[in-house]
Length: 152
Ligand code: RB5
Image (tube, rainbow, N blue to C red; front, side, top):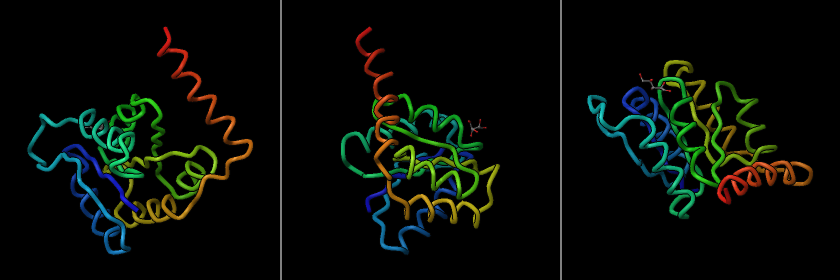
């Protein structure tokens, strides 16, 4: 699978570890920055947006985001219409994020989860599939909120 990665300065180290981990499984991993831990000009809204837009444009299928908490970078990604990014700090939520919410992006906090737990989270996220059915209607309702505000 083609996966886009993004982080701010706080998330670079974990992002690179996860890229290595998922590349070793055969995934095609692309880094959308931040590339330099000393670069504070590439704050979390920017890489969050870049990864979300790469999914929207079809450059990659899914994304992994990392900042200090996973929060800011996921909030930014979720502003891109059609994108569903969730913060996960354990595998159960990562599983449900795909199976029920059809999220394309998993976001994590490098100051919250350790490397091995983060690997379990991404392994779970990328091994699950959306269940559709009643969940499809609910996810469509989320898109409906976006459509309502785009009309306004
Ligand atoms: C940066 O210090 C920190 O605020 C950021 O990485 C993230 O946690 C924001 O949500």
